[in-house]
Amino acid sequence: MVIDKEIELLKNKLAKKFGAKQIIVFGSRAYGNSDQESDIDLCVVTELKNKRKIDLIREIRQELVDLISSPLDILVYSEKEFNERAGLKNTF
Image 1 (cartoon, one colour):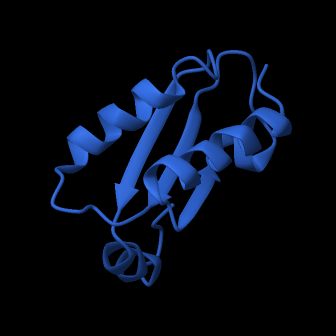
Image 2: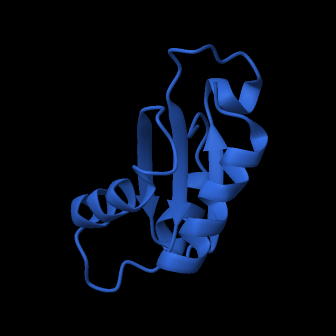
């Protein structure tokens, strides 16, 4: 099962490699009710730099594949998109 230390390792890797401004863990891991079958839900706020989101998500997955065995569910937003969505109710 993934521990907090491994989550911090993921966050540090994303911040360094992709210049992520915010990395938010949400879902069962954030609420503390995950089990061995739970995935890791990540919201990554970063500059897209003219990349398609799907390509950036693929790069992130490739970068993290050796660090963790749990499945990943990754959302990527620019700062502007994130701030717009953060103002909505029921975003996460």
